[in-house]
Length: 393
Image (tube, rainbow, N blue to C red; front, side):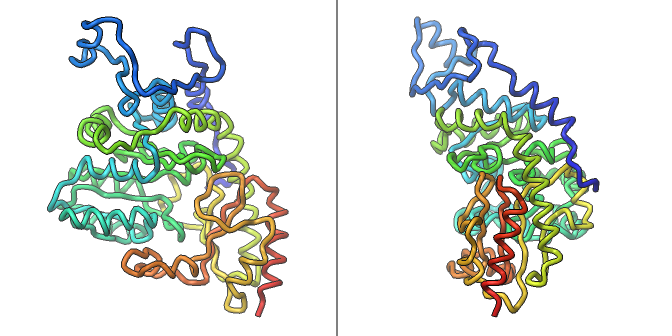
């Protein structure tokens, strides 16, 4: 694909999505925070209208809150969805999107290198309720399509966590629709700027808004976007009863940072490619796992790339010494904020094997995940270079 990101479609969406709030009585440039647990009524009939479904006025902020609804409308606009629902974390969104559509005895499909806590949710929670979870190599489109018959749901990540493998969302979505299988894609890495899974037939899109959408490492939030019918199912079956609501202040933080998303993602795209290209030529590195370097057809749904990817160091590099020698790049989980971060798989492999997705599906202990933040890529490269020198055996 062309390595220059395409911003035209997103720019149109973001222009519409970030227009000032027209129903604010004071025409505030920044959306107000409705920091309230409940909403009052002027009459019996007004309250009855809400209970009867004749009015959409909010009742209680565990259900709907005007600040939260604004974020939901904006994410739906950006993804090309009819509706969205916000949650207190990405895992809250994942759990609700799955629980709303599966029951004991159902079978779901997912990919081996799925997000580690999604893996633990599948293994520790879903299986306890009698849901069968099959892990299918999503890079093999024919194998994934062959596994669809009889499944209730296919949970995908394009790209996957840690190893950044791709799936052909277009082909899988088409086949799943024929089989009556619901499809869900975690789109946190690409954001609505660089990938719109709903446009190629995927049913639901999930975002960990703690990542690029929030963009400042100060918010934990999740979102699900899709059709009125599917979000309605989540609303009626799960959302009111799990308490995983997103607070208005956290919403305000995400709304604030959405306005800079195109500028930040342009930097993550360009800086990530520059650092990844340098790593490809470094003699301290065996492999760089970045979707830009893949020939897989799953790449065609991207119009640009995030700044998160992994690389595998050569045998002569001591992983712990390399990580400790970094100065600009810090050690930390999560990603999407201004910091440049590393997570070495070797440390994560110490997690108990039965809930360790890296051990289960064979991630090398020489694999290091790198988040290229908002630093100058040349500064990141200089830090990596000196750390490689310090860690050479």
